[in-house]
Image (cartoon, rainbow, N blue to C red; front, top):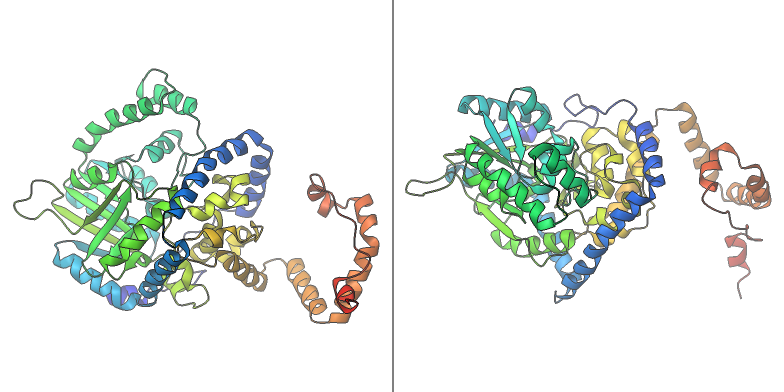
Length: 482
């Protein structure tokens, strides 16, 4: 596909090319959220797991001369790239193809899956090894490969554990952060026939020994891409285990999958983005392995793939790009920092969201990628505390995007009763005297609400106490100030 085809592929939020929402997504979210909130042991385990992250992250942030200025630099690098995507993407593609790689454009998830399956069939592939790639989760690639008869194994340790459990990733960066060591030991015993152990090192070695033969047997390696460097036509992949290097280098074909928003202009941009990704996402000074891939193995080289393909995915991104208000959500570098600090994520867990991208940034972009009407409930799964915005290394104004989504959802509310409620609130909010009268009535009837415990408030009141209403409104107090 040429660049002109990608430039014109800008599906609307309700276009048929978007992945359909599962029926009853909102009901399932509420049901699963309620169940997870009651699972206090699970919540405590996740909070303990994140406790070490907070400590190490803050230590690494202090190592920067000026953390906030670094955030400004990272934000500027992404802002310049996303706002010049029409210029930088062709430059990247030209340089990547000059290096010997092949680029494939995919308008949506179905087209991306078709492209990859066609490449596998043409190569006569039988076995596939794959490193962690959230974009592949977005297009449901593993399910498509397995349905077509291919064996595919996740080489990232966390993703491998999740694959054995039959679960998607729980978190962008820590896919199995909710799983205890004894559960992993039992899982390996069941699937790999190993002896029980409580040692993280031994559990890692069990997976490593199992993976070694799979790398050698694989015909195709599939990876994601953290950044696409327009200046050099290189793909940047960052990882902690070295599995992505083996996935890309040992099989005879390497297929990378990336959203079109991952492009950056210069190699120098990685000097700020890679350390920021490591510090914000995992509390590290740098991720252990940072590799640039320029194309297939040139003549005379002893390792690397014979063929290298890159699938560039739109899947609703150009629709976000066309909206100046929402555009900066494309700056996301998938570090997971907003998930780590979000009180909602820590209480309801990663699976409750029911979609590839969890937490605050997932609640921002999922309604755009998969349809606002079906996924607007995610924007309501927020306390609007702003912790996500404060944590974001590229300064995405996440909690205001959640407010924007709520506003847009109110305009498209499918329920007549909900639309009526919005209109009534709008009418009251536009008339200060009516708003003040409503406050006067509410302050005097609040004790009655507490006594009656109406059904709409019963669950909320089950774990909270309503404070006593003030005797006077804020406006009245303001007028009477000294």
